[in-house]
Amino acid sequence: MKKILILHTGGTIAMSEDKNGAVAPGKENPLNQFKNPFGADYELVIENIFNIPSPHMDPANMLVLQQRIIKAYENENIDGVVITHGTDTLEETAYFLDLTIPFKLPIVLTGAMRSANEIGSDGLYNFKTAILTAASPEAKGMGVLVVMNDEIHTARYVTKTHTTNVATFRTPTFGPIGLILRDEVRFFEKLLRHRSVLLDHVVDHVYLFKAYAGMDPELLEIALNEQTNGVVIEALGAGNLPPKVLPVIEKLLAKKIPVVLVSRSFNGIAQDVYAYPGGGVQLKQMGVTFCHGLNGQKARIKLLVGLSAGLSGDELADFVSDAVS
Ligand SMILES: NC(=O)C[C@H](N)C(=O)O
Image 1 (cartoon, rainbow, N blue to C red):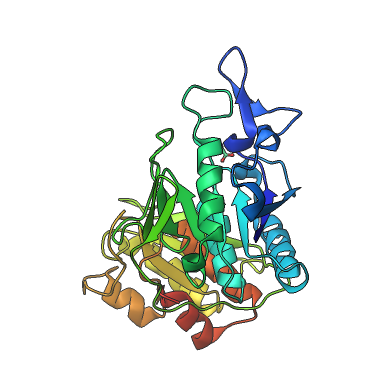
Image 2: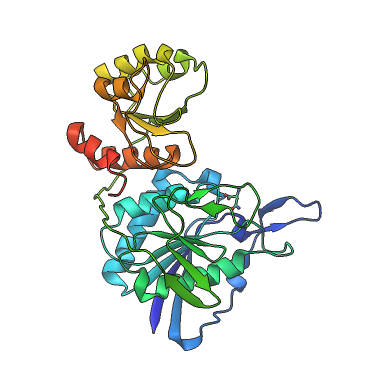
């Protein structure tokens, strides 16, 4: 018998379409109509912990989820957790939990691209396959997982790539680590290393900026204040910035505000390759932290988690830059 804790948080998987085609949460969560297809082999403990669209999700809510899971692991004898979530910020919640849950418990996030009463709705199917994955012995020790459209992805690298297509969740550069084939859960990769940190609160004022041709330095200047805890920049290509923004970055670093760099490219990692003004070599010499392999929103979660866990200086830089931790 497998005991799976189900935490519903909202999102399209919990919404329905009205007669004009507008999608919104109704009075009743359609997931409550889910009939356990697994019989007596599975005990599903279901909680509607939130009912929010995922653009309303924030790190404080992510911490509520993390604490609920830790409590269940310590006191309620569970074998796995499934979280249903809106897809817009699903990857951020998944990665937050990946970085902050210190034990080998299968935790699987899923959602839907089509609401409950739309033709071809993917919600119940994704929910079912997420439960199967959370119950799989092989999911133990794989970190937090995202299951959508018959694919299993790591929280660390998965990202939403399409506004409406049901095949929206992809893992650029590396690919998924498993598949669901009918009702069979098959993993074909292993996690090499996994590092989590302990935290009991989350810091705010960790900003994410995106670089562009002719980037205006005044955009970054808004981070030059006492409240700012950290800055992430999605840089150009292999990790380069327009030279106009360098004086602001110098000022941020002088104030001991960590500045983390990722690439805005969909594939690949940020590295110190180029030695022209604003190139990665100069940025690294200035003290910018390169975060290898994460996208901007994940690097922001990682910086926020590291800061919330009390890391600073070299320790924080090591934590953030090591994308396989
Ligand atoms: N497919 C979805 O779930 C998108 C929705 N806007 C959400 O993230 O809540």
